[in-house]
Image (cartoon, rainbow, N blue to C red; front, side, top):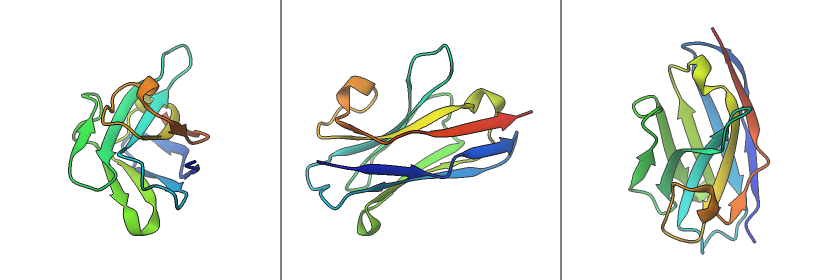
Length: 123
């Protein structure tokens, strides 16, 4: 069982930066991929970014590529999402997730989820 606890959401202005943090439980040896998803009102949950828990490969949605960076810190059992140049279109509830498999871009492929944290970007 993997427990995920998120923090870092908030209200910011367009162009600002924000860092989301997701702390995982100690039992992460079976996790292969850590990911971030977001969901805005009236929209489906969409893929944002993912990375190998062991480090190395990262994957991004086209809408955030070049602005967001995902990273993992195995020593701290933490995954981070650094969000720069935020836009009002980034406003959504952001979710941290962990997958035991090797696929990464669909919510159905993830086994564990955080509680979600709200990110609101004003213009």
